[in-house]
Length: 541
Image (cartoon, rainbow, N blue to C red; front, side, top):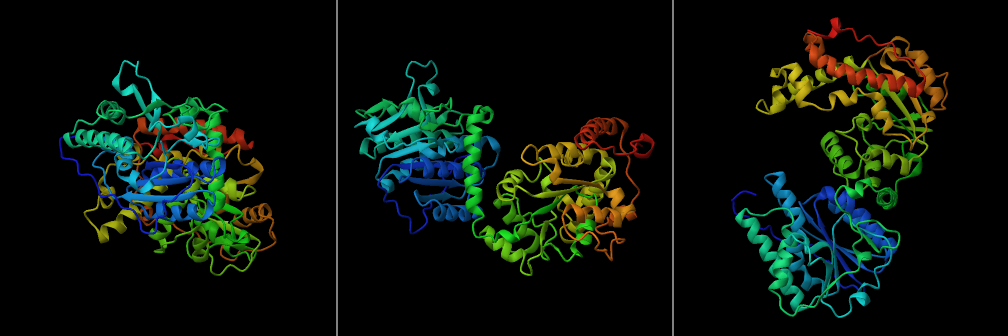
């Protein structure tokens, strides 16, 4: 933390919030990323395993997509009252955000206790409710505060743990959290805040709050080992990412949220096949050819609608690409498919799904939940040629940017050394050409029989034969003849006006090592040979 003074953002509570609950008020705080990854599954776990309680979500970093999802939660989770608050904040660096994320829950809790006026259970956002928490008030009894206590711990930050905290809204408990919040705020304001600041502040606040009735909460309410007989699994660092039980339970609740999110979308309109890539391998041409078939439908609004992207990314891309602000999946389909006439096959020609890790994270789980029998068409291109075409695509985009904003960093791409740009600036170039790596992310959720592998070479050299094979794969009339399948689409202007750049030997060999290993896996995966020439004389300076 720097010595710059810390200014606490204003706490905002939307109107028409109903805080009256009969059970326990569960409380957590998170940013938009953690909201989507963990807060939604937490809400579903509470609604499923301990109904008739309440959940309050405090969001730091205002995001309209989060608002959409909170409204979805309120409509879907009939057994749980959902309320929320927020603050608008921008973080100057990652360190400040990390410390603030760990502490903001207790700063805001000190302010929200009077609104709740009910027993409160404060949890880390990556916690999961595994069984009923209804006996928690009985287990704690008349004590005002319950949390994991290790007073014999050598380090002050380990004496009182902050993952699970239960409190009665008494004057003493409010005083305790005000003391803790003040200590946190002072440390952040002075620039001395460090990891475990919340737990250090708890210990200091406890010493300054006489007669507060405190007890060690039962381990079943703060179980870091993910036991079957626990009530609450407390997410803990990388441990949760490695534990199969935690990941399985998290997946179940995420799956429930996905299904609810897609309620109202007509099942006949949900794409049942997708051209998943590869970027710059001929997907636009294939999309145009398939669009001619009377039994195949694509959106006439957007070639790459990204139907199965996580809602947050889907909403932003539609706003950017076609200037439409959606507030639900159902609305997105209404916008993207206004002229759908009941065609047998509905397509999604979005290459995002094979651009991991830079794009498409979470899409495969959505596809599997919504359309498990999906058919996938993957067009492959010589991996090095695809990287070069990808680079020219960036040059084209840079020229467009330069016309409107010549000082934007993206407008200067043409001035950057090619090898430097490939190696240092754009990590998605190489992974997008590692086809086996991209496909492996679909397995074992989908069978290999659900995939048709084409190459850009065969699409260009034998278009009618390739389309016939594609029509057969999609179970539509394979005798249909494409009229414009000799026309190539989405070619690069920069490639036509610039000489082909060359790789430095060391960079080319580094890339080629990854590529050759991937091609070998790809050939084994589909029992097929890919006759690509990787001779250095063509690509190396």
